Length: 236
Ligand SMILES: [Zn+2]
Image (cartoon, rainbow, N blue to C red; front, side):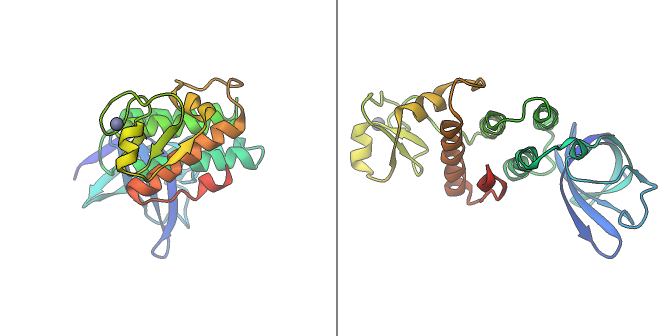
């Protein structure tokens, strides 16, 4: 049996059978994995500090089929206890939901783990909406799902400057010529467009409502492309 040891963040948790808990983990070296904590509902001795959502753990587990059985875990940082209000909780839920929807299982990806870890930690220092946007954008870039905003998504030509037309089906902004051929799409404001083109949005540069529009544009885009909905983003 192959034993793996490492760090992980709990990104989803549910009851499993009578006394077990099943968790989805973002791990440092093994990607996202499903793992079962035997008897974890009744006894916390093997899982010191518990298996709560957002917690950073050190763990050991054995592979069994497509998932894993946890041998033991130790809590390193219970991110949840630091929440002072509702918004950080929603933001943290968004991080974990985005991470669980965009990254595939059992696919080693250190970037995904450390992005989630640092985003959760940052949340308590500067809990603001741009952090959610950055997390969503980076995760989409990592997984090749971020839309085209610079050139026309169809002909790669210049999109022109007057009306910015975004087409969910073609994967980004379109020039006028291509939009004429495929009339679906929506016009986005110049302010929102400048925001979508900017790198890491710095606090204060763009107002929250523009950042929120950016999140919803990407959310609708993912709903269309991957057919997934994000429950947590509705509360942003
Ligand atoms: Zn074009």
